[in-house]
Length: 168
Image 1 (tube, one colour):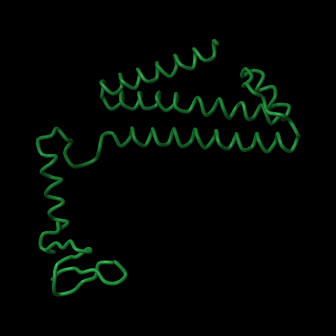
Image 2 (image 1 turned 90 degrees about the vertical axis):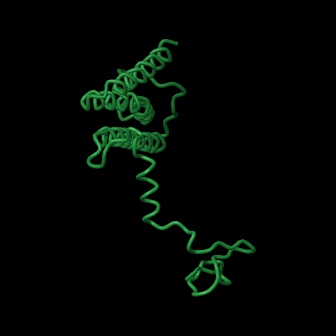
Image 3 (image 1 turned 180 degrees about the vertical axis):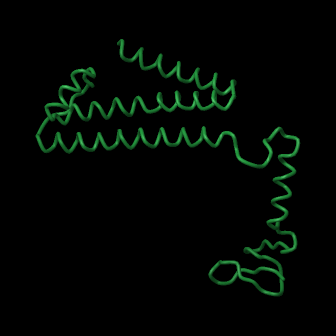
């Protein structure tokens, strides 16, 4: 049994001839099967230091990272849209720089759209920092000192970058 191409260029099952695409043909018996793919994957991981089958100890770290980033960006995006809508409705111009946090909080108390936009920007900036901290803690909890250390290094770089930006 082999595959051939019909007029719609979709492969169709037929009982004669090889798989054909234009002038190139391949015997269907040479096509890989699902079992062959599983064998190849198993052979590729044998002796490579891969973890054995079963629950992945890093699943918690993945879930923590995804949840932190998703939540942070959703909060930031929601604040941004709310601040823009509020600024448009109240005919308030947006700032070209974010105000200090104390001024932002006072502005939010007064219902100012630009203050909400500033808070959104702060939330979006803080999200990767919080994610790096959560990932570092998760690696430490899993006992993976190397990746906990690397995550801490990323956190320090992010913190230094933000501090330098604020000092200017």
